[in-house]
Image (spheres, rainbow, N blue to C red):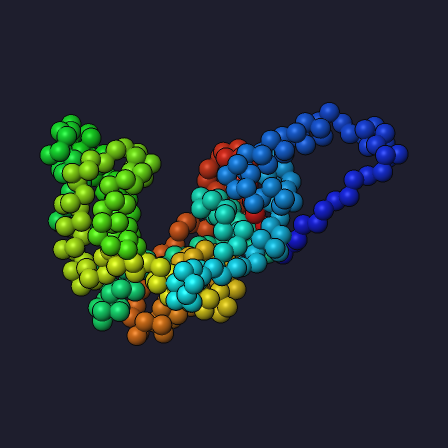
Length: 313
């Protein structure tokens, strides 16, 4: 890990020497680096003070040690609520994390599948065996939208393809809401346009919630029960176990580690869940295909400000 340090300003009597040895090409590169850095900081504000260097068409950052210092945040004056770990490195956008390096090595990111839903099932003595957000047998977003406002076939497919996003957000709202009314209000006023790229008619919410209740009958008593804040305490305890056992970078229910240690991380995640929740199993998924050691970038060919460049730890 290479921490960054502030560089003192040069004495006034050295400025003429610096100006004399600075070529137009070097000035242009410095200007390009700062433009790329400004673009990165707009997406990841905490990177403003990280040491960086333009290499080819990419900007490379050295993440300082303080960006990896975690704070655990509880809430509501209770040790049973919240408790998640927060660090500046978590602000790196998810699509940029594939460019991270730990000790110069490419990384992988693993996430728990349907973590809070799986926890609720385990608490009821049941195993979540399928995708928690797949309710296509009982609910078809495209068909429901067509019934409400009338759609052409292309629009029906548009909503159907985005159904999982809608279901995932709706199910999490139901679990996190304090009561039925707050759940309804959250669903009714949620920014669905941003979530699926198009408005979602209010008339769709009732059949959507009905389909979710049918799909998840074993845990439906946890809907609009304010369970989410207590589940955060449990998932943060899992994160603590995984991070202390592996040294992985924790991002709530996901973890970043050297790609060569993927199996070690996967085993630690599944073991921590089983030990905390009565021996129940849970799926663990890879968030992206790790880069090769030789690759300086992923398959994308964007500019430094588009990709975010490499982040070295």
